[in-house]
Amino acid sequence: MKLQLALDEHKLEDALAFAEKVIDYVDIIEIGTPFVIDSGMNAVRKFKEKFPDKEILSDEKIMDGGYYESQLAFEAGAEYVTVLGVTDIATVKQCVRAADDFGKKVVVDMICVDNIPAKVTQMEELGAHILAVHTGADQQAEGRTPLDDLKVMTDCAKKAKIAVAGGISSKTIDKYVALKPDIIIVGSAITRAADPVEEARLIKEAIKKSQ
Ligand SMILES: O=C([C@H](O)CO)[C@H](O)[C@H](O)COP(=O)(O)O
Image: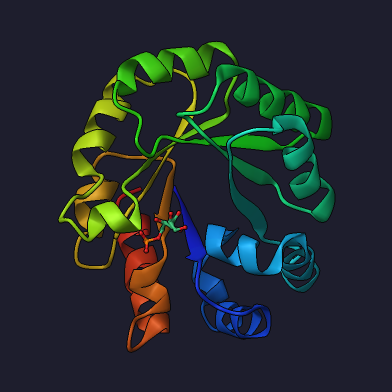
């Protein structure tokens, strides 16, 4: 089980310095969507240069132009790119084609997908590598969590790897690791913590204990 650190709100130089502090606990560094909007593929390149042994995810949440937008991430050094599960199947197919051409992976973000079992079947049929259960920041603000969707996903996914995101912290991590996803994604609980290193350490410890 890997820990993915989502960097959403930092500027590039601050993000690089922040990541340095917690890097020992992190397997995948996510260049989060707001960060991609702010710094683009330059952030992916800079993170890959500074942390060549870590995997990088470019959280583009692709909605169209699947091949080209995936290619941008992979050429910049990302191992993973995200596409939205709610988009047209043609776009997901193009992302998967790009990932296969570059030897990289596509993560389908299931945010706002209503029928998770049907979408899982469709995504697995077209070869999506990872499916991410995701309760977005605005949904979290209304009191929602990704736990129930993760249960549904673990019951129906047969071959894709599973990731989960949405307000997970050291206080809630045990409920998520118990369902054995392949990747746990944590953003604000670490980046906004009073002590980010301790928060990252506690989360990584819970992951290790569950294995
Ligand atoms: O994908 C994300 C969100 O849509 C903002 O871009 C976050 O990176 C993801 O939800 C993880 O962050 P937290 O929910 O703060 O843990």
